[in-house]
Image 1: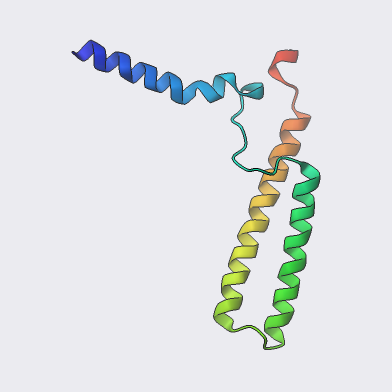
Image 2: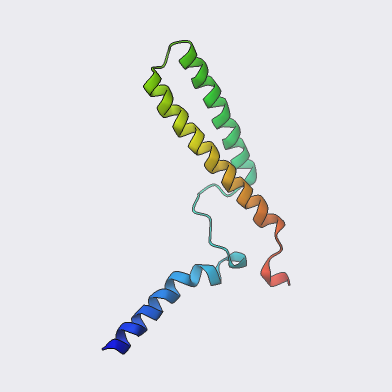
Length: 101
């Protein structure tokens, strides 16, 4: 009975680690649907533009403080996420694949 549990554990571990071994270049696939550097750059620019517009609306009194804090947090986190994904894509594009060695 213990042998079956150990065998199932090893198989489960192999299935969980398979994306590291069989992915492109040994890396996991990106969890995002946007994998194009140009699209990510456009997203960053759009988020920055939206942030500035919302900040102006808050200073003009069109947004409440609570609403502005929520939008500010959301846009900041989205911008950071897009910047990290863009850096990751640029790093993986400049890195030689393991198959070419």
